Image (cartoon, rainbow, N blue to C red; front, side, top):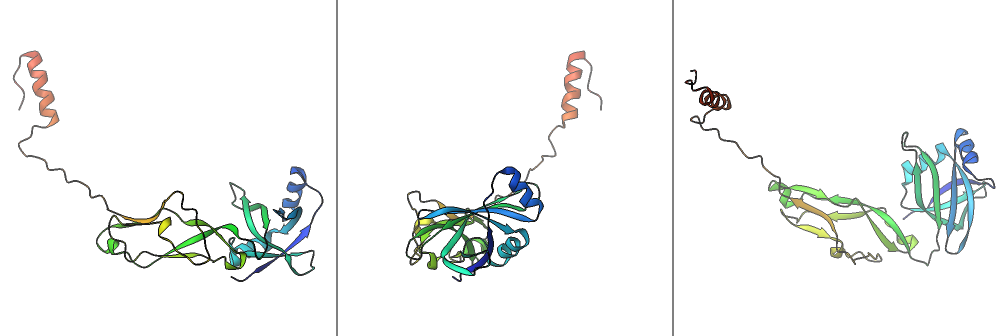
Length: 218
């Protein structure tokens, strides 16, 4: 996977008030941390991070260009968390996690389902249960996505996490959860009405007649 570069600036101030000020200026507060790196605070231009996420996504390696000094392999990171405004959806905070080339890390990788399942051709419905998977691998081995071939799935079949065998990638299989399945499409039952059945109105009329001793009206 290619390493994307992201321009950031160092900052020393923090706090909610300062964060609001940054956002009003079109900047986003960010922080970088990790097992073997100090906690460092940055700012990122809103337009820069929006373009970065659109072009490079959020699951790959990021080399931070701090204060215009250029890409630095010592600042290799992954985007650990993206906080967004619940109303506008805009990015309001970023967490970077520092990584080392030879040290495996946990990352969340999106899933891509490929092929047309046999069960779909038979009238079933392909039902993805997971849209991404958490995997452990070396930084340079992080894939852009996991491609899952669903062609052989019949109705009632499923692919579980234990079915995946991807070189250089480890999954937590302590819970063998379902990734994707083909379900039967429920059919609506037809309601058959007997012409000889008495309508609700007729039943109510007969009941009233019994109470008054009169014959039901026709």
